[in-house]
Image 1 (cartoon, rainbow, N blue to C red):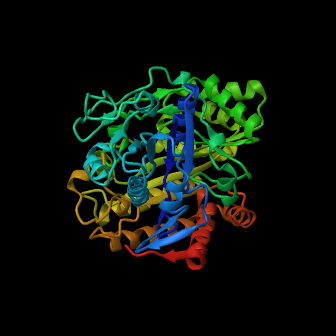
Image 2 (image 1 turned 135 degrees about the vertical axis):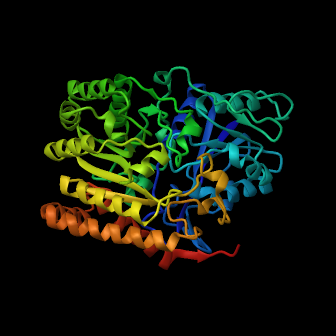
Image 3 (image 1 turned 120 degrees about the vertical axis):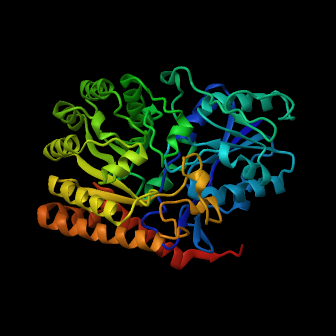
Length: 501
């Protein structure tokens, strides 16, 4: 019998393909698939987005990319004992609900579980929204490390069990009757099976020529080299989904994965999607030494962000560059100290300026991320953020990313959120917010100011960005994102069939 895994469609908010529509290759789901196969279980994988990334349909303000729900269900093997649907990103929630409904309409008695994506800040905790999932037909949800609770549920169903509420399923499982707050966790993440990337339509992802991180070569793969984040940021979902516990994989294991991908898929570009990969400076240096010692010809990029204070000094930056690191995203979040305090977000400006200087010196591109609209923020605090962007631009930061805070399920802000109609509305372009127009205007002006300052301070970098855009060899997201937006706009204009709610 089969265990069927489903990665849902990509959902784009049509009024902002620049901020939404980010392509995340589902590395956590690939790891779960690898764990199932290591136990000799038969796995069928259906990537609703990856199998048809240029197929589109429109639902009001959203464009949904990939197979439609009926096409997804048609691919489910008849002998499937349980279907797992990956809750990869909160904006894709609409797609997840459509797939649940379609599965239940075609296979009324088939059990459907929802898998939490605990290792992404753009995902969402399932505990606060479990009732909605169950109301739409889901039978259970898996939180925490999927390789523990998810694997246990797969084996339970293969043994012939059907009544999911008959007994307490244990840590990491939510059902209509049992809500276990504790997460299932892998004891030793160095013992994880390699991600089962051979099950995924990699060529379709690569053909897009854009990803979450800046894609410089025709082929890339994401990596998770650590799990969790120890920081208590109040706007973030990670404190809930990971319990503020950080666990790093050994450098040797990480580089083994890289070497395996080079041999199996001819990939030499890796996008590190950890919540905070540089927490251990010693581990990062060991990682660099391992890559250099093996003589591997590769590049790697920290694309999901890291805490700049955990990058200790010039020696670490120099080693990272020598080992192939070409991009690092950091998150100052705000230029207002009072807002950082309110967010529980520590940030040391002088250290950030020093590290950005080292990155410039050694050829590592840098990104600084900011958030707008945290409760209590006003025009004065936003001006402080603008001043910080000016300072970082002068220091040589290569790009900025500015997000409007949204109350993701699992964050502290979610319980106070009102005004949205769907969880898919909880993306970084929250048009339902009463102050959205004001925040959006500030964001656009800040981007324009940054480009003008960068042109004045670092004109050669601007020229390089234009060349990279035209060549589709992206060194920064600011080169790649306009290209991605143009692709989504073109697909929306030419291929987006209209679907009524």
